[in-house]
Image (cartoon, rainbow, N blue to C red; front, side, top):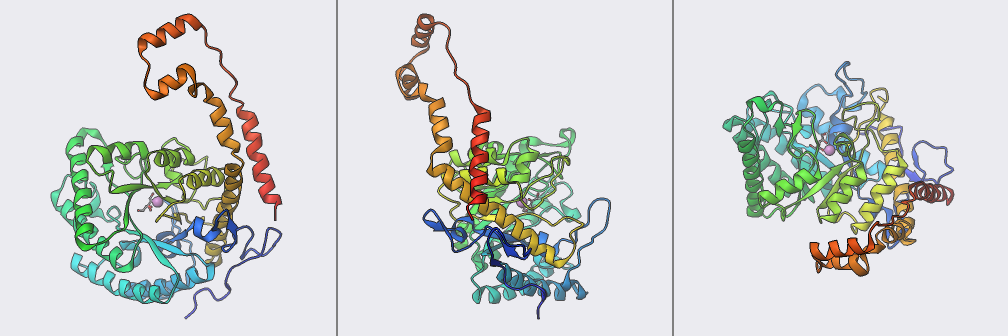
Length: 442
Ligand code: XUL
Ligand code: CO
């Protein structure tokens, strides 16, 4: 059965194409440097936004027209979604997908029934994966939507909820192992607090550390070798989420002796909610050897919540790709579109058009970043700016061979330091030049 009859396999048609159902810049087989675009970008579809989401918002009900909604029985609908998903992946030519347990199968009356429902869908997915090039980039469990998680999951005040959440993670690890997931994600949707007035901060953080250790141990026990990823977000739905940003998350992992077992899944819109740029979070993870994967989306500058828009900001995709290329790629990670079409873009074809827009935006980012790095355009600016640390007193500071006494003697002798301009406007103009010439090149 076909769910997207009007759509044929999406092809690369070049930058002059007027066909909305074609790639203008993403040409999977084209090499940028030593690797193809497909190998470097490792795009993924988020199952929840593409197949489960109904496009409701806090003020309005769902608008999405989804061909699989003709099935009213929840299990029939879940099966239809798998069928539709694989048709979508194949037609889009996207190599990966990601899901939460709750996206793929309905909850049962008991936890056991919920697991049984999942098993039926996972069996079906396993069959599809056998005949497909598509792979599971990561899976995770939803320990935040159901009312039982009102006070959190691994940071709940209620030990029974902690156990329930742990049971779901154990199942999630088994499912990931069966389906060959390359990563396993922890996004702490309600792992944080609403108010400190009724919160035992220390106990909650210690419990979260214990929870991650339990997951690491169980993955080892069953031979699940996925990369574990923490996905930072500062707030929403909590007022303070414990994995606030990469720096918070990294400090937490180090405190609890978990840093060897985890990397970060950096989401653009979470970075901006934390008051950072996307590239800041990527850079922070990269310089600490902790960049694992990316949730590719963008926020809206006027809206202070997680709008999860498809990425179209070429500055952001370019600077993100600079970080990713400098990281030597994403390894087992990828660029998962944790993005939803707008409530007003409710037609099934919009799902394709949105992914095409995102994939083209990152293809432009990749090409531009590759040229910036090859030419050393930003590297030269930075090394020139820090040249004072390459010789003399600067070299001694970097090598750790000086003292406060020597630095004072130096400062007394030289007196007022002389600074040089940072030339930021010139650098931004250079970035514009690189972007525009990428767009011109096809
Ligand atoms: C929520 C979010 C999640 C995670 C997975 O803001 O980004 O969808 O990516 O739980
Ligand atoms: Co996300």
